[in-house]
Image (tube, rainbow, N blue to C red; front, side, top):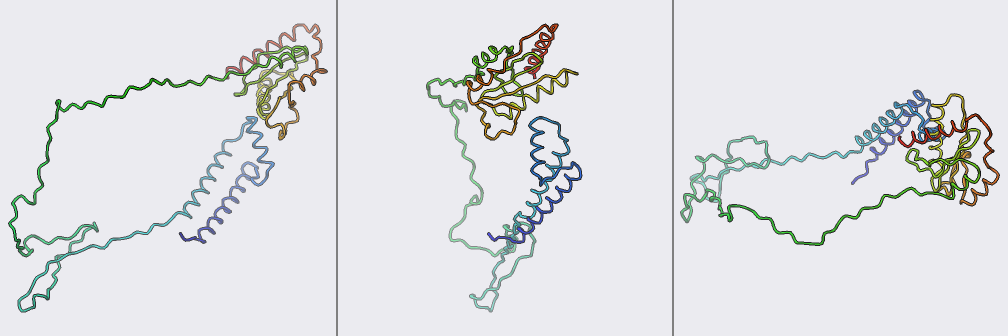
Length: 315
């Protein structure tokens, strides 16, 4: 296959044109620079934190990608050659008197145009010369023999072949994995004076611990999950707090034990530990202050957190 350099140059020109057009459109309509890595990083952070992004941004991106691919297809698609088959014509051969029998004159039949190249123009029956045959032909030689009909047995009923008996194999069912329980994690925070709440599942992420303390503090932790997942769970909780509370601020502290992305994490406000022992050592001087007489404020705060946990579990 030949390499079409003109197609390659046209493809490069089309890519440059679509790139410049996309850059102009996104800069004008959305103030988004497609050549800036910081803009793409900010867009990924918005998507990870489920912040709303204009629908027209995604529609413009899909249209530009589709136009680019379709234009490259129109440039690089192969052009098929159309081969027309010649029309074959046959004629009869006659011998004129006074001419040697070896010399024959070819007379062509009347020209009839056919659209099908594989169809031959035949001569009329009255213009064909008589043909002699050494043996007589049967009057039914050119007709098609009748179809042979075989008799059916058992009134035409067809019995299926018996199935071979084999062992009855039952499909194996995979047991549903149950979320792990972390009693040592709850014991660390309970011994530090915090009230441990049931660990909910937030946006499909199973939280290992959720504990509350005085002065509207809240601890949320996970084991073996990514810091990005923990950031998503914290953002979800803070969104609920801001929607349901007017002036009360809840201090949320998140931590992850044995995070897979601990080496590349960019969240400085999420604590990371390698093991339970490191967390226990860290919590030695982070005990919950003694609860004083606050006229039932802590009980109201505890009931509010229970309602939030119940609400998240139903989402």
